[in-house]
Length: 575
Image 1 (tube, rainbow, N blue to C red):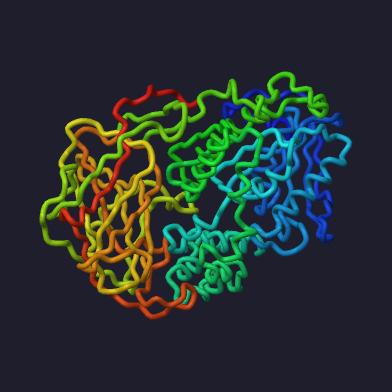
Image 2: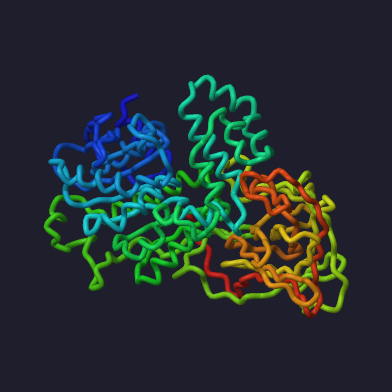
């Protein structure tokens, strides 16, 4: 089927704006030479020979599949689409080292673009996940040429997501390492492994020591996996050149961010949004009921991204002259306005009759309401009373399992029934009485858990759930914090006050439902189990079990804070 017809049919099927008629010329495997001589293989989807805005996508996942469709959709809309394989992937030379070369390779690619006869002086960028990291690596250096960015389930920094709560996001990191390696093996072998349910990866996620897990999963040593096990320190020099958060405020182009409530990078992406807002920018933010790889996310990213590029990228070479006329005109502060793009924030409220909401900013005004932990598994808004602590024993040889939530693999991610894990003796649950009216929460969720522990090394995991009338408990959001000697001060009784930031959320608990809080010692393999021994992350093999106490008395008022919205904004349809 001709590529142009595929693009037109896709536009109709996905309810995208109509594509323009006309041929699209595709040139594949163009050699773009980086400053160190490495050749970066690049595909060009051209709407013709005349200068027109260019959209750059740099990717480690190959230049085929959905990117071919995106290239044609962009070209059919009058853009030059340039899709480049990051070094060491997709036919490009060199060795892939995550985040190391993306700034320099991006700058070199932009220099190459500027020398092309079809270059108009207007650049847009589009990227999902790692492709978005590559955008942030280049964005501050692209200067006035950068007119628009589309950042989908991504962020300027991977460090805090890798070590969320100062633990280690084992499932995400090892699964990603296996996925990248799988691109180098024969297709039939890969399909066979997927059909078998990836038993090697499953075994690797349970393997100790962790510095051998990459070989169990792939048969080879993955350099970046080994490095990430070693460079855990947040102040390590290793991360300074691999984190681009300090460059976000310098980006002058309009940015649209698309993400999901159960995405692995959601907190980091919202940090980028806050940085842009503090710098005076007006980014658009769309948060849906999606996981990192869900199909609905892909459709929403296309709709939002193509519309954003249409609005802010302009369409002709006259932008090279900087006339400032029309949709691309700059405001007095040098930033492009976001008129016409709809509300600055559109988000989906999960749960009962939530629907889509348009908001003027993130987060919306809300009241931080404490829900206190009480004896006998009660959760209530009234303050704590004198009471004995609850206890459980955490054994890293039988670690508390993770269920659903923000994971890299869509089919295992998102909301699930938690009753199986809540029945374990190493999980404490605190549940409210049935709600007399709907409860809506939108914003950052946090907890403070007061704990005593037999061991000095432990994790504190907290999950918020919605319990329906049938008793099904579905996860809304969660978070984990790793405790080590000296990180949190102990009081005279030996209790530690551990603050636990949970994933942000927008959720409506129905009347008659109950609010539940889980407290546990881990969620493996989403986060690497805490061995309790204090051994280094990659080398730990000694597993020490121990008792934990969760306190909930007036001196130690363990609680979860919910950002409660009292007046719900109007619901809208997602177009």
